[in-house]
Image 1 (cartoon, rainbow, N blue to C red):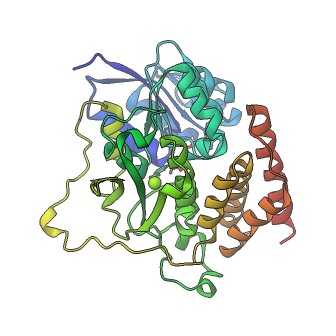
Image 2: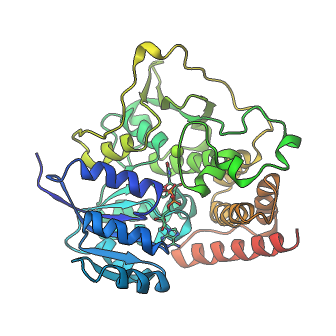
Length: 393
Ligand code: NAD
Ligand code: MG
């Protein structure tokens, strides 16, 4: 077995962060926690410091940082505060692996910091790849680190592509198409009219997965699948037309790779994020995840079906921005974050999420994503326009 790995978990208090801690706790001989990070939740952060005793805990929020410092004076963990500290721990020379599990565009800078330092990066934060796909993947290639997918679908694709190396054209492996599975979320088969009044709690009640609130709303609109189409395109270097979304309500097959000879490989498992997390933490070895296995005798039928036409405008918008390229995916991601936050706060209705994203895309000129400054300005411009539109609703 390989030597002990020093790990940073960006977004440790979140759903993916906590699942990562659960897997790590099963393997104290393999992993040590160099740093955990959070945004504002000082009490939860203090509990994690007490339970896991990481060397550092970074609070992005200053007020949260001051509070955490007071809460852990009796512990060996050193508290750092502010966004710059997220980037510092992600690139620290002691660190081997970084779990990128911050939600949203806030994850981009610290994740890139780890990539630029050549770390093994376990990528849950799909938004950073959507926002800055080319720049992100160029940085991965330039700095020679390893990128491993945590999103269950991309992890399934990776497992179904034996021998795949980042940057390698998939034709070399004989791939003809990627089937990206989608549960369809809680509102599959509902009419648009019946969705106008749904509440945030209804939208967050995913039939198969327990996740953070932003990604849960994204699953209900299927923007999550749209972001994953873009994530797949960048991660595996495939054009959008080779990524086919298929509805699979049971979330057992986590995606499939089709080859030119007609073979289809897939990865299956229970809907439990500890499985892809354990896969990436140990890769290329295997370790226990703590997740329950599947009893194949109980899988009566798996069910696959096409995406109902016209029912999920966010998914269509995602294909369009992928095709358009440049800064359009950055605009889409930023507008979606503002729209989802507004929906969760009760300021806009569920159906207005897609409308708002569409209006932001229409309202901003596309441009080339030549450098990070341009991406960050495009992200800001889309947030500002989306915020104005929310205020006018
Ligand atoms: P979550 O809301 O449960 O947790 C988010 C984490 O990010 C928290 O630790 C929070 O403190 C931190 N954070 C939020 N805003 C921040 C900011 N501005 N600065 C610094 N830290 C901040 O989210 P989640 O469901 O765990 O999702 C995390 C990421 O993983 C997302 O990109 C999501 O799309 C992706 N993902 C999640 C799942 C899942 O099952 N939850 C599955 C696949 C992919
Ligand atoms: Mg996913």
